[in-house]
Length: 296
Ligand SMILES: Nc1nc2c(ncn2[C@@H]2O[C@H](COP(=O)(O)OP(=O)(O)OP(=O)(O)O)[C@@H](O)[C@H]2O)c(=O)[nH]1
Ligand SMILES: [Mg+2]
Image 1 (cartoon, rainbow, N blue to C red):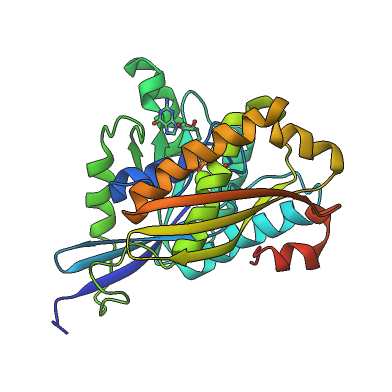
Image 2: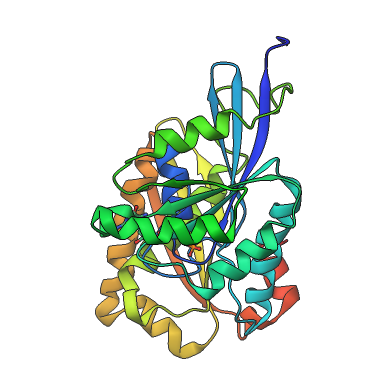
């Protein structure tokens, strides 16, 4: 180990849908965490390991924090995100243009009581004209006087480098926790299930059953190909038809797109089979959630 090594955990937190995962992927230079124009896309804490020279930044992507405590899944997602707040060396609160909401304000108040450095990433600046930024930056400055604020666009990449510079300065002297070439602490089994969930989230758009979870049942690697079988869990019989679609069209499309992405990720041909199954009321059943891999 070199004495100069630095390594630290950085938590990405914020309301649902503000672009936390898009920002992680932009920094990592690849699609590690799934994204969609829907709240609650991220459901697990995902570690993105970003090593540059002697600095290893361990980014923790989290589920969006929300007020609604409808059911056990909501509670688990909030617990997962809040546990990260306690563990990391530095916190990045992601908020989005065009405005700061009451939920952002409440989060800012809460996060400022923590001991870590707080950086605010004001995302989606590509959506507004530059003059619109000023009042929002002023408001954030007044709400969090000691936080550093970086307006940026995770989508276009504008100013993301600036955020990285600020973060590098926050990383303490410490030996690397992971090998420099490792990208995540999650397995390929995890990523293939996430890829299917991403395509389902994107394809189903408005009709997306909220009670939908994907689990890898089988992952068998051969020399030039991989056999993957995933189970898509829904909470009610009626949701099965929505996922499958008319004449099986929706599931077929999801399968085709997901298979393509898996091949890119794994560098091998992928044989994918998908099965839709009903686990009644799993979103409000802590034991079912545990068995599906949701843990805080
Ligand atoms: N215009 C614009 N859209 C963005 C930007 N960053 C993210 N988005 C979009 O915002 C939506 C949500 O992005 P995600 O990265 O999934 O958001 P998230 O905060 O991880 O959401 P949850 O995991 O559900 O909490 C997606 O449709 C993204 O493409 C940005 O800089 N500009
Ligand atoms: Mg996310």
